[in-house]
Image (cartoon, rainbow, N blue to C red; front, side, top):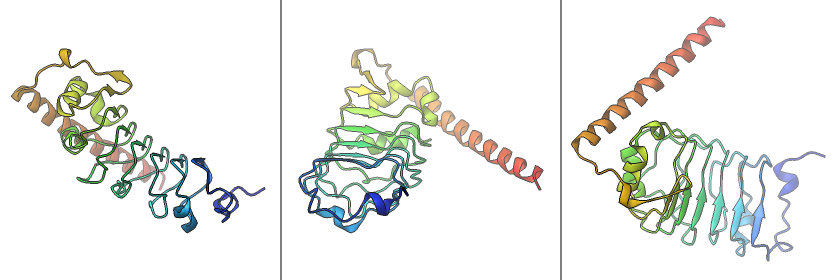
Length: 209
């Protein structure tokens, strides 16, 4: 039987109007059908392993939204989801977080294993989420830096857990101008590393010609 989005998302919303949790992982979904927005009782929506490129028609009342493994390159705007508290965006290809792209209602956010490379900028954006308690950033370029954990916890002071480890604020290392210099050097190293990888990729492609 052919497993595609047309088969799994037939318009039977009148039969599933009372469903509160919906899991549609790995169903080759690119665009969410219009009738989905009428599923107002859906509180948890799992769309992992698809190719979601837009949030159109996602029920506005969702409390949990999981979009892991979707190949997302550019951050989507989640601000219209005024009730969402848990957002999962792990294993995508995000490189930056635009200001104002995340709702202030978030309690838990997973951005692990993306391509985020500017720790200072990332913390600036996330520090505005005053209710944020649980954050995952491991697997991004900057998580390799030895001061990564202390830096994040010192900038996002609402956190209780970072990368599944409880935050102990009494043991945080204070930051000064030297730490800022380390962050600048880290940014340069990441940029240089990415350029070298890109150059190696082009060189490899040339060898096949």
